[in-house]
Image (cartoon, rainbow, N blue to C red; front, side):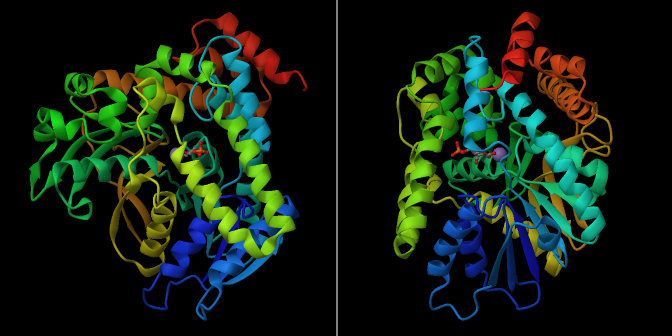
Amino acid sequence: MRLTVLGGGGFRLPLVFRALLDDRGEAAGRCTELVLYDTERRRLDAIGAVLAQQAAGRADAPAVRLTTDLDEALRGADFVFSAIRVGGLAGRARDERVPLAEGVLGQETVGAGGVLYGLRTLPVAVRIAERIAAVAPDAWVINFTNPAGMVTEAMQRVLGDRVIGICDSPVGLCRRAARAIGADPDQASYDYVGLNHLGWLRRVTVDGQDRLPELLADEMALGSFEEGKLFGTDWLRALGALPNEYLHYYYFNREAVAAIRDSPQTRGEFLREQQTAFYESAATRPATALQAWERTRLEREETYMAESREATGGWQRDSCDLDGGGYDRVALALMRAIARDERTTLILNVRNRTVVPGLDADAVVEVPCTVDANGAHPLAVGAVAAGQLGLMLSLKEVERSTIEAAASGSHQAALRAIALHPLVDSVNVARRILEASETPG
Ligand code: G6P
Ligand code: MN
């Protein structure tokens, strides 16, 4: 089986490779060939050096091929993972700085920054979808490329339900909640609903019983894990659900903006420095590329959402959240379920159909799905609270205006996308953000 990764020179690729190496399942449906595509040869070579060390002594390791030719990468692929970052980390830093200069949130995927990132990414993602349709029409496409909700929806318009979006944040939340209850995360089922980076865990069912009310009532247990600390136990009880960590930017917007503005570097600026150092060291000292990668990865995980944690008392992440087992686990579980027809349940970004009443059939939503050889089938989630549905509708309108702007080049649609975002507080602010983002430099 051949897996092609677009953005194969990306820093998180060794996590995927580690998961492939650890896949001890039956031979059928195991990845035997890994093709890494990237626009930059230098990045491919650096990641290639890490992978070579990971594979040392492993006779059954997948064969790895590196290429900068998109069509060549796609041809013959059974699965395509898309994990690209258009504009690199320099682009991310700009997406953060431009809105921050206007006093509103500057973040990779949330707020005006997410719209700017979408405007830059969507044309590239759609072109990739078109090449997949032409060159590998039978491949399954797993999209991690952010902003994952809108990118998945735009790619679906070309490829239909063969493209499935993934994110590690819902599964992280679910597992933390189950552990706080004292349950085995793999034995619980989760009622989660939302859009990507905008969702809520509403029930945690163990042995047929919803245990979330018990968790909400238990001050100690509720305050013991990331979301309890981030949102505060009283707010979680008032809400009656556990929000995705990204909702911190909405519910505590003022504090989040202040914390990001007051830190010397944005996340994008920090990562840009950190990653530049890693890629340089891997190029000049390939023999120690794996150690350099491990060190860099741990530092990246330890500093994840540092400003939000700083704004809520300066606590550290749990060690179980540092192992990076989120993103690669979801991707591999999805690929395995499809390839081996091993029915499993995962929270994925798929077309709504009739699952969330109030959203139209083609809206991509993030909900639990059963997965088998025929793809992902969303499970009915039932009525959504008005406040949650309202936010989902607002954000879906932002996503669709962004898709329209990227497809047509319409300035009006781009302005609408930014101005209608609930975290942008004036149309004039949106105008200036758009103008600044179009200014070179
Ligand atoms: C989580 C999100 C991803 C996001 C990443 C940012 O994993 O689910 O969508 O890209 O965090 O992490 P970073 O280390 O790049 O700030
Ligand atoms: Mn994500």
